[in-house]
Image 1 (cartoon, rainbow, N blue to C red):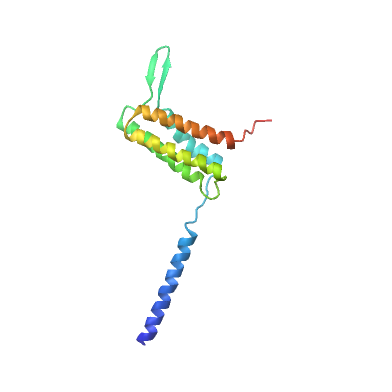
Image 2: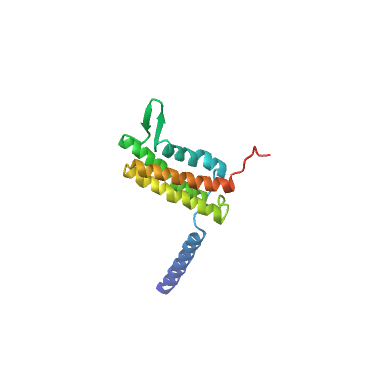
Length: 154
């Protein structure tokens, strides 16, 4: 009886190990909820806008206004937006969203520049945030030049 119990235990353990390997091999099942246009509109653009509206200064006839946050909470909001932007790069490379190798290069640039903005916000460094904002703009522009389709073009 002990021999039969040992054999059954070994068979059960082998079956469980096999199931675990199959689950690991297949990985998590991603579910794409938004198309790339809506991902940009609802996730990327608002995060980038927070960064861009928090960097640099505006000069008018009445004087210069610095856009950098003036409170810890303001810097935290910029850091959160930068984290969203960096993670959005990962979203853009998910199966079902990625448009290929060039697309992934641009998405990786979004991760890299988003991380720069996060560091700038953590350090409350207005100059570094301005630089990161410019780099984010360059990444966005390069991607848009290649992939953005103008529906109004004739």
